[in-house]
Length: 314
Image 1 (spheres, helix red, strand yellow):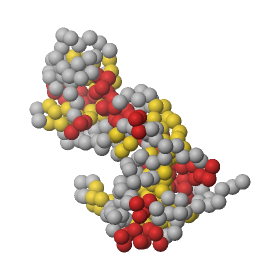
Image 2 (image 1 turned 90 degrees about the horizontal axis):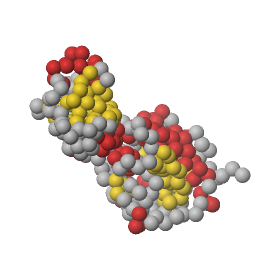
Image 3 (image 1 turned 90 degrees about the vertical axis):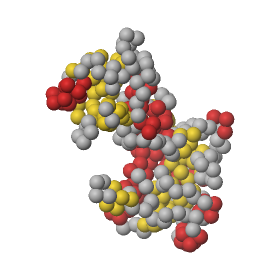
Image 4 (image 1 turned 180 degrees about the vertical axis):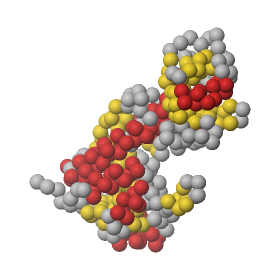
């Protein structure tokens, strides 16, 4: 028996959300309106740029709403007049006040990129990599006033690979989330909401640029996770003579470093630049010098070998 098509308001902003919107557009359900963040300045010219969700909505000629806030009663009235069955939220970026949460007939559901109650909040994908979790996943949850605290409707697990950057993991979770959303919508009347265990809850704080700076005194394992977690944003970095060098890819080499200072270059060749850390070696594979683009270490050493002599402290 096919489920009854639902009239859906979709709210989301980045590429992660656009994958779910595309899945809805290919389903029997009807997307009656799209909410997304206002256009933001982007690039060197600071030109106003539409979000990935808006771009997709424009392609399909969907009604688009871009309020700066949903706390305005006039904006709430507009949303209520849509008379939707349900609102689907995915990385929207705005808080939904009670009036909005209650407006759709079946309320609002959220696609969250973690296995709740672990990693509620803004950066669950990056935090999962930083914490060396072996798995993560997607939770479809009923939204309520608290941040990611609502009852869980459907969960799907996803392994975290040792080479996963946040971008690679996000891409997999986006596809998983879209599939999980359709399953949840089709089974909505039969799903049994599960209350989150508050004692297991953790919070995934928003990523800052400052925490992407590498400290050579910690272990190479921790630094390598930072490199992966902060790729593609804000990108792990080090300071050298007041210049910033961005680290895009690195691997751990298990080797005793007690005879070296943290941050000391042990070896620099086509294989990589080996740096002593608090434990083991971090081998840099792809880096970006000030004003340049990301290149392999082999390419950079061809032109700038003198900057990375053995014994130099970074």
